Length: 339
Image 1 (cartoon, rainbow, N blue to C red):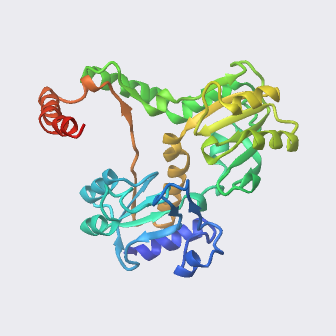
Image 2: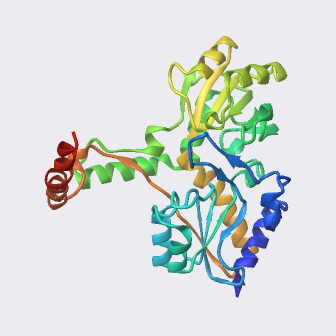
Image 3: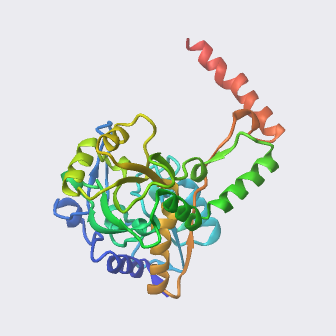
């Protein structure tokens, strides 16, 4: 029988000793992967503490769920399906990742242990660059001295010669044809032609260049980590061989300064997978590794699917009537009386 302690040890082995092992790791300021994240919004700071966030070390574990971001939906699904431990890629925060209530109360209710990894997992495997058609010969996770600012510099794989090859490769690996078929069926069932889904509306596209543009040396960036136009200019100085900028996980849109900087440097610009697909890029490798180290434990994947639908097409007729009555009879009168 495996325990939370065994899961923690497995994560420590997989990350090369990056998990938190004591309170001193958090308080000393010396642990390189215990990182404060702050936008200076009052009360919204968080400290990443890779490893066990909540749970007893001696608790038995028969089933593990790997997910990107733990939510109240994750906790409810875990409780309903016998999951003993949730391993979230992203950092876990009080209330924010537990339906607005305290983590302890909610996780205790279903006897669930919670782990996080995030920065401690980044850089452990070359899969994200591989999926995007190149082999990284330089990897930075603190480019420009900024924690979490990631840069891969890579050379394309033998069968990847153009920007179009990269897009075709991503479509195949990510199974986007299945997502398109699923969305089509859901639109039909719900009578909601306006419905869109994250992985499809944000699928890879070319911003500078075209499908036939040759590509060989790639600067692979992640805009949400704070990668700036100044960072891009510096990376080009360090790697004059670069011909293409690739943005993945997050992306930029027309008019963004990074696109203008790439144009100024004479580079192609392509966007790859969006953040919602990281469950495949990082979650699946982690899950398979855990299954190998803990063969007696069942490992499952919790995968989010987020859609956008026009208000008027959401819900059954009964739910629409309910929502309209709650708004008109209870919410709007309060708003009018407080004007």
